[in-house]
Length: 379
Image (cartoon, rainbow, N blue to C red; front, side):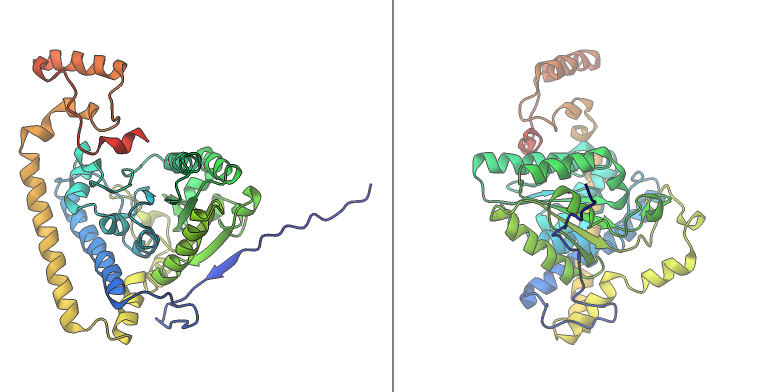
């Protein structure tokens, strides 16, 4: 039999609305109010300033190693803005701006990176999972939530995040496949910053884009400018609307560059070219978005000073609250490590908890004190 050509329907689109010179494509500009645009900028800037302050705290030994989000703010902010409160949000670990928008506090983040599990407790009434550090495992959680939505008939969506390095993990492809086969309403947002710690993108995959991997699983894929918060919002909003309508999953690749270290335990100067970092730093999301807002008359020097002052106060208060909480016995109680995973603690863990309570002389605390937000771990 002769060889024949199998036609592949999907094509990969690239979306950029606000270019690196802050020039906007009016035809593609999303319909967001001035207040919404200011809200986006405020939380992106808060994430940037917090990132800088957290780095100082880590160097002082007040918190542990943590992953910076500088230069990645447009991705989580644009994606989370496309969600309703009833939708689910499943982060990896560079989603600070989006998590703040969803209701998490800087105190939560500080406690987490200081080593206290209480910082992983989602806000009341918010359908969020905690930060997930193991690479790609959260994608399976998101796919499972989406499949459960279909079974229950819920018309909601799930947004989850992955890095380019996560595409080398089996969990990633299992999640893509399950979501596609069962038409789970999941939007996979890939933060393609072109480096998986010290491994460049060229050593992660042989194809040109992450987005085209969607074709193999039978779902739509799109690449967007990951430094353009408007493009990220537009692409994820479209994918979320399709997911809620029963159209299944989408892979949104956000192309950016990691202009800071992978974590505070990393030195990118050993494997990245300085000129490349400088080139991408000039394209970072806050510079262009601020210029866009000034051109629209939303941002000026007076408004900027007000936002800066509010952010500074928020960060100072968060650090003070962290220091205060760390001094309390509540955070120091090792029994609480059992209390932030299940809505109802399983018998085998209860047995371990009882044994530890006895060893610590805290037998009166042998019954698990379930936290207010334990429901998040039961899904």
